[in-house]
Length: 111
Length: 114
View 1 (cartoon, each protein chain N blue to C red):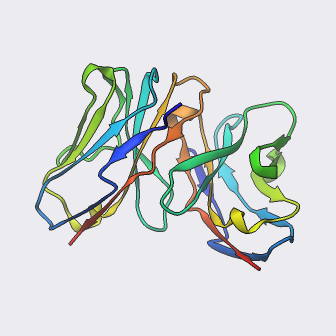
View 2 (view 1 turned 90 degrees about the vertical axis):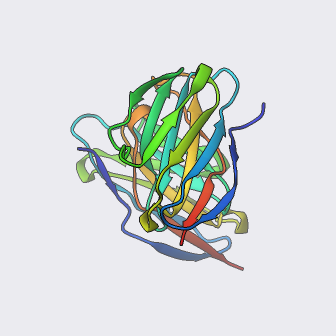
């Protein structure tokens, strides 16, 4: 069965610093991988997705993620974090109709 | 384009009471999902509808949870009777179809069972 592990429960970065959020997955075939963001009181918004092809995926709001099959990872990155990026980030694996989410990483941005 | 609407946004009930949540998906979206998000965890799929038919309800605790989607549009999720462990945010999402289509999430209903 597919599953996702997000090793970091909470990360704090300074505004303007780079960010990397880790995601490791378990999936029997070529995975569908997603990153979602959830701001307080809001629903989840899709940042980016990987189905196949280029392993470096560009998303919205300046985010990107790299699929590494050998490491079963799909880490999310952003070169320069803005205060508005403070939120909860979820990695998910599986087709759209059967996504399994990780427990999330809460991002705090220091001024 | 209006997003997915959910109501109420917050609900506090006592254990053994019943509660219902309502979801209005994006117009024209055939697929509707209900998720349960317990504090500190990622969302867990409870049930998926395609139009007004159930596609997957394998993770729905059917002894106390029920859901319907009349006329293939709005949906309601009911809990009867509620338990303390049902305290969570209940998210509704919709998509045009199931195959490789993004799900659009509503803001959720936060349920507290005391």
